[in-house]
Image (cartoon, rainbow, N blue to C red):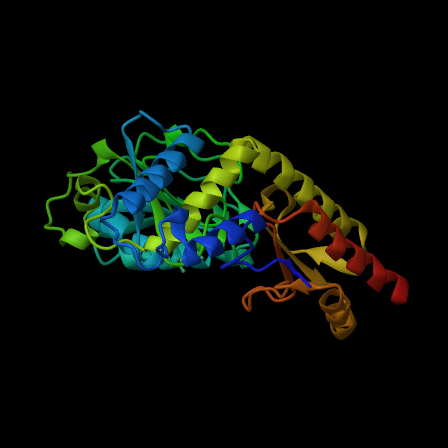
Length: 354
Ligand SMILES: *Cc1c(COP(=O)(O)O)cnc(C)c1O
């Protein structure tokens, strides 16, 4: 039986994508070859890479606007250092909203001074700090749009004249934003776009080439731009599956369609968290993430009963991250409203049983 997959990442992808991706392992586009055995320099794969890069920009509304899309390796964690490597000359400003921001700050400190403009660490990152200013002499401002672990999301990005750098690993392609406000966006594929193994980087070219240090080739965005994201062997299969997912998003109506469904799913689960006396939400209401809903039992002694209920219902991956405890429902683009209803039914069933 197919599970209702609420895993935080790697995570659910569209069923249609799984089908096409598995077929391509046996015979890619009727070529008599598997996608796993073709050259990354073959015309067939070059066109996959080009379509993936082009679809990413198109869906974000950034086509023909001086942005370049790259599919790199090393995960979002490599972008923590690569962003600083390429952009940090003296000082950078960071907003600390959780585990991933904290890690990004740690890496940036290897390259220069880091000003933490605000942090929500005082409340175990259950909210997004709102009032802060970005220093005038910062080389860039970095933030994390969606905090996968704590279940908070930035709703309004600060307006700043500094280059805006954003880790969008867990909510890219999930909601409409004016993406042209951003100068560098990065996202590990495995949260909302594809399998683990590749990271989307969208960069505005004019922010590059401004630091005085020498940057090793693999760490230099300009290297990858100059080689159309093919400087070395890319993660062929991960890029291919990401491309299929991007096609799927486009066919479904683009980011707007994703956002409409994501809002419905979020409303459904948060309404139950708020209504049901056996549960309480973790994140501050105004900062709640539609991607990752974090919640706890009001009485931990019901844990065993509740866990059995959702596991028996075919739900996977509902356990919270160890730093929050409780539960986390990750509701990425490919998750259906019906799957969320299954969890809500389990929450109501627990109430009836107790
Ligand atoms: C998962 C995650 C990361 C880390 O991604 P890796 O690809 O594992 O390095 C970074 N930032 C956010 C917001 C994440 O959710």
